[in-house]
Length: 136
Image (cartoon, rainbow, N blue to C red; front, side, top):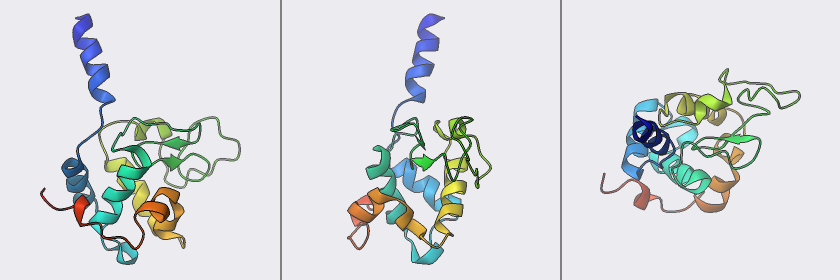
């Protein structure tokens, strides 16, 4: 029984593979918003979290896409939080990317678009992103 619980805990914190992320991105409806490509989102996920959906890199950044708790999700502790995506931050820390990508979709529709993410600006913007989408 204890082994089963430990296995479940370990599995919930494992990074996803690139092709799983690509499939989720394609199914989410984010591709094409403001000219974005599937490669943009897979690249963002790689540089933001290494495809790790359970990452909480700083006290205010959550999940595979490192969604900020001041603007986008509710962590229950950030003063003045807006929770524009209407999602609990802790719900972004699992392998189900539907809620993450629904929030990403909302963020990308804002004036900053993908520029809202520093990892995307520094590593993905204007680059050939074929390596993130080929072979899946």
